[in-house]
Length: 150
Image (cartoon, rainbow, N blue to C red; front, side):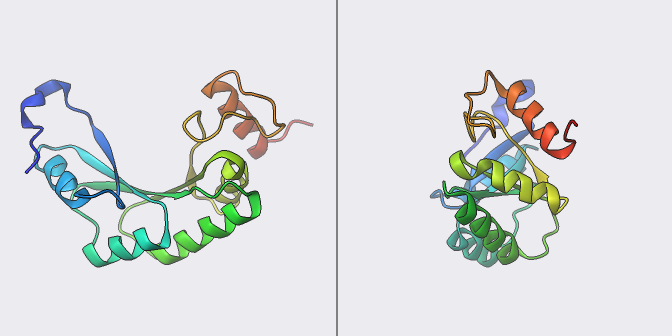
């Protein structure tokens, strides 16, 4: 069994655990045992099946539905497939994409009123295909998508 209890005040508030990782349920249980919340990463329909079979672990703060498909259209289709497969959950779902699909998935999430995110972990290019100067540049681009200037 994993143990993080000796971290004391230095322990994190939340830990990301991907459902496809070996031992994910044990990591969730260890985090919950010491008061650390969990965000569950779900990348595929197979991950959804695993999560539905196991159930949402105690201490789960949210599920992150991650479309890792790089093509814009395919990324949104995969995002929709994952979200529909998840169905209604007792925790929020945050939807985001990666690389070439990141902006299309972000726009879809915004249209659907879903929680979403953007950052260098997901994509390095702004929607205009220029290299972003930092996370703040990506966030500014996302705000402009939601509230276009003009």
